[in-house]
Length: 66
View 1 (cartoon, rainbow, N blue to C red):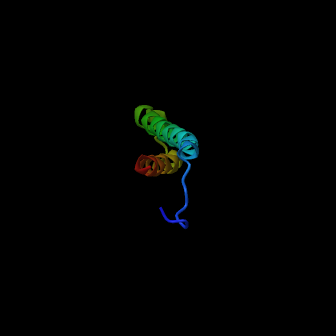
View 2: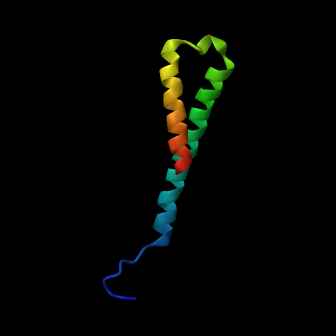
View 3: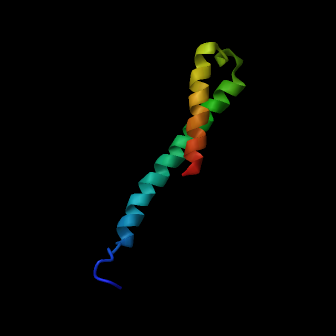
């Protein structure tokens, strides 16, 4: 190992990964709930709610990437 190579503390990486994974799961589940609610409840299918529907779909897809 060369002296210029940075050392990585795996315990710190693990501690940082857990909150990030939790946030991604919460975001994906929350957006899935918004999508499911608008699809199921026909009263929510109004022009003003399609904006939120499209944002939820986009955020859901981005959340699945991580």
